[in-house]
Image 1: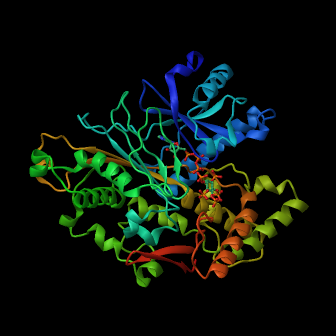
Image 2 (image 1 turned 90 degrees about the vertical axis):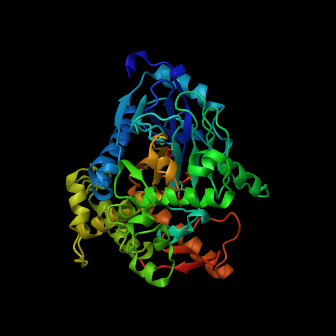
Image 3 (image 1 turned 180 degrees about the vertical axis):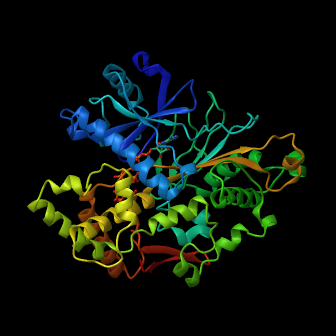
Length: 462
Ligand SMILES: O=P(O)(O)O[C@@H]1[C@@H](OP(=O)(O)O)[C@H](OP(=O)(O)O)[C@H](O)[C@H](OP(=O)(O)O)[C@H]1OP(=O)(O)O
Ligand SMILES: Nc1ncnc2c1ncn2[C@@H]1O[C@H](COP(=O)(O)OP(=O)(O)OP(=O)(O)O)[C@@H](O)[C@H]1O
């Protein structure tokens, strides 16, 4: 990428979240740029200088590469690098992508003032072995939330959202869905075609059929492939199994997903949802799988928000008295090895010190990041000429598993977490356990549990 020759026509809208917007390169399919967003009311007066924006993105890179990578496993992490882009390019890009942005995300605008962005590999287009005729199938899962489809993994997470992205064609023809199940959010990437949704009041079964029709060519094998027939249930079951196998596999990149039942450890084994499993947390998950690593990192919050808040207040009070201590305590970074050491070597007993309190807050913030990240799984059917592809069921896939959105959560976000938690608890007490439609998702510490298809809330000791 030649930074002095940037042309907005080489880039297209890819997706966005709450605080960043992502564009992907049209020709160089392995590249994306992630740009910061500001509240729309700040569009005339950017809330930070170019230097501060650069620092913010460098902090994101450092936090990912020095802290989260060590906790989650390097093989799953792509931290990227900060780039400085020509301002005119960024302005033109912002105009170009505007009409593709979902309306409900337009309360924020793309940062067109700093010229800073994060350059990352495109995780929906991973360099997986030899090219095949069939394009990669990408599934993005926001781990905080998990959908009923994945109820086998229920015990890991606290709510229900999944984003599924089906990409057809590496260069040009795309069929894409990214869907937030809970809020009915769509992110249609350029030229995207929705293959699955569960719109409120919409015809879910039709959408599920659309998903199944798109999945069928990936999952038909052996006789089914020749006869071009495979009924819906096995398609969905196979899809879940292939996806679960990738999530439970111990390789990060470029592994091969086969049916794990043959290895004596099946997906269903992990699906048993019972009190034992909740109490033992990670038991049953392969120790180097992405799910295990994320769960371990989520469990750094040994205190719940109510237990943490007094420690946060201790640090806050100390900073009011000694503002310069902010740097020594690494409240806003730098996110280096010393920061990691602080949270890893935090004593188990409170000695009343501000260092202890700061380390607990650091741990909590890291845990929050691990609860809010996403997993991207890219699957490519293995060479269709190979014997095992034709005979195995479900067919074998090459895969890559990555974790995205590992930004540090600000120190100042703690009081907001407490308010959210209090709202949820009062809602729980008011409704006797049933969340009203459209309400906030439960926070960590509250599980949406499913047994025999029905959902209820359980308080989970953390
Ligand atoms: O605060 P919450 O619980 O609403 O969570 C925010 C998420 O909302 P949702 O999970 O959809 O309700 C929100 O997700 P959305 O993409 O907006 O759905 C973000 O993940 C946000 O993180 P950040 O501010 O971008 O670092 C999340 O904020 P943090 O609380 O993790 O800082
Ligand atoms: N490296 C990448 N490769 C491919 N797609 C990506 C990449 N990074 C982000 N995306 C896409 O862009 C979307 C927004 O990115 P991201 O989740 O990092 O934004 P965010 O604003 O931090 O989100 P959140 O609202 O969860 O905080 C993702 O959901 C994903 O679909």
